Length: 515
Image 1 (cartoon, one colour):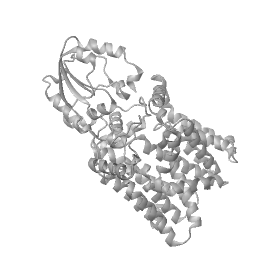
Image 2 (cartoon, one colour):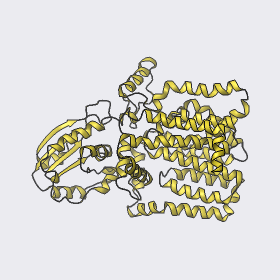
Image 3 (cartoon, one colour):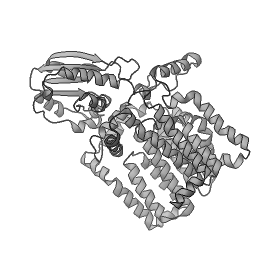
Image 4 (spheres, helix red, strand yellow):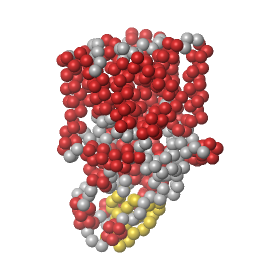
């Protein structure tokens, strides 16, 4: 209690706390400018089926979703609250990281401001995804490592090992950071750590924490491998290495100069050089393997904190110290829509159209497949879901015997919309062979299905052949939505047993359908 009192008596801590609260409030204020994100619908749907693993992600995001649902329900506000809160935590943690590196008052505040204004962190704390949680774990792990380099207390090794195992339950990418840290330490003056018993205890604890997911992967035949293969074939193949490097400067934007200064500081520091080498290794490996640009954002807080130390050391006068964060904020304001949807749909469309018409810029509007659209993919993925749920509800209302009805969705976004938004329309759990929904499909229906709501961009030939009556109920009409044109079909009066048809479908299910 005494330590808490002292913390609040420190004026710098209060300033950082106010900045953290500001970061939370800003995200909450714009939470409903768009709809649910496709991925948010998936992750909230995972929360309805808590497991030790899922097809494409570790289990933590599903566990978090389950907790949120039980407390706040299934609303858009419930989805957006957690990442917004995490954004506040990250401000406090990054400032503490600056202090651990030796930063005084100014460095701590500058670090907090720099984290808030980065477009990539504005986006991360707007969406309920493993990305923001991963950023938190990377930062906390590096903070504890800095503490260990400062204090060399063996108990910190045990905490770091436990944290690494926990972080692996959120996103496997953390393994890259851990591997690079271990390799960097091996070739540094800190390699004596390999002779310490607590180091191996920490590894054992980390593996033990991660073990449930590993056992789940073994039991399911390592679906993570299939996911990585699909990622490589469908997305990473489109990653341009030059764009990867330029994105490292665009994602932090006004804070980019601190990242550069921070990397130079870490490389030149005898005590913290292992962190600089780790950073270079992570960047090099991701560049070589064509990793997505945002995979690096877990490194940004420590680089911001380190860069702020450099500014604090060489900028002594009050006026320039005020001007630096002020300029960072002013530079960020015009590009805020790149980080978060501060406008509604039409405002965002006008903003990006203006960039093209006035400056010839198509920035941010290229989808993962390389095509260019009116809105960035993350924003297009936050449109159309409410309309889809409403159309599906309209189709469901027309079914006289709902015990003999089923809803099928071709992809996880559609299925997530029916599972989550559809709750207020009393829609049943959807069927889908995409993503983790494939684990929840029944092998047989009792009673047999006579009414089938089919959701896809076009009617499947096998479905059309099975049912005598097929009616188009409606389709997503928002041309700016990524799901534009997705149609809801109401199928009835099957020509033969739906269970026989379903059995054949399950037997011919391919890995491609899951991803």
